[in-house]
Length: 255
Ligand SMILES: [Zn+2]
Image (cartoon, rainbow, N blue to C red):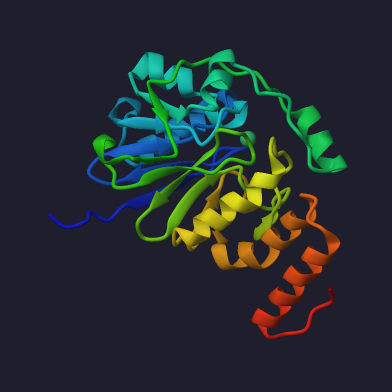
């Protein structure tokens, strides 16, 4: 049997996109906030699916905006829930850990967010790299910490990755194809490393929870350099990196 093509469906839940990965079976990646359950149900119906048809709900991380319907899917529809081991304890508390804003605007956004959701004990605990073939799709969950310590990305063989809040697209709906740092990061120094890992693994298209599809090349060109700024890299080292960046791009830019 050859490799089955996977089909990705974005569900534009307000606050955080969810995604269907359709192969031999269908899994759901993230499930939106509880207040938007109708959006999720309508999208499943459009695909000809009942919630109980899902073989897995995989959470990229434990936040109210991405995990708000997890307990309902698990309890009412017997959908097993998967999350990385490092985020499992947060999922079980039903409350986001305090958000670590990366800027003053982010602090305001965090203040507006309701951090509570229905707590869930996961059925599947993900590790560093977990193939999902036993759930009917040929994708792999890879640990990409940064936004939370237990954040994962789901990689599809054609070069797509669903990344949760590792990075976001645009700013409040403007320029949503433009990569931007997410408002919150528990370990900001690991965001750049996780993005670099995805690039090394051959990811070309990044699908964030907030915003539209992003090109990996565009993320590498903008965010990773900026991320280095924020992790205490020495000014000399940073200048070297920027110079290298300018040289490899073959164009002059202000440094
Ligand atoms: Zn989040």
